Amino acid sequence: MEAWQQKLIEAAKEAALHSYSPYSNFPVGAALLSENGTVITGCNVENASYGLTMCAERGAIQTAIAKGYTSFKAIAVVGLKSNPCMPCGACRQVMLEFDIPQIFLEDEAGQVISYTMDELLPHSFGPKDLV
Ligand code: THU
Image (cartoon, rainbow, N blue to C red; front, side, top):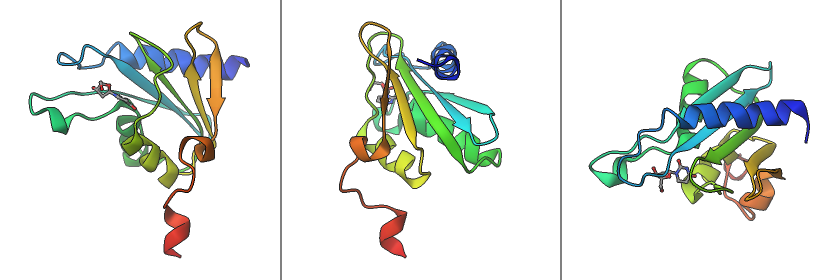
């Protein structure tokens, strides 16, 4: 595991500390590494109307895009309660849109595991299908 990967995981953990998850009690953090080296984080934000919950990954992507970052090297996703915290289907689809080459999670033992977008969302429908 390389130092920058570990740093991204740590940034995701720190973001998870800000999670608003009183219903699930399942805090999640995500950290996106932009092409120029900037790290943008997000955490899950739940709602009394449960379906309005926003996942950590989509929160991070939303913030990054709003700040003008459009190209990314990697995203790290961690849960504070249990790992690996596999990205949900909605987040996989949104990550695909922005072509994030590497997805880092932590395994049960705290080791970094790495996935590609194609591993997480094979046979996808995405931007390539609309050209
Ligand atoms: N959650 C995320 O933040 N990201 C995922 O990819 C999986 C699920 C959050 C949503 C909800 O607040 C909590 O985890 C339990 O589902």
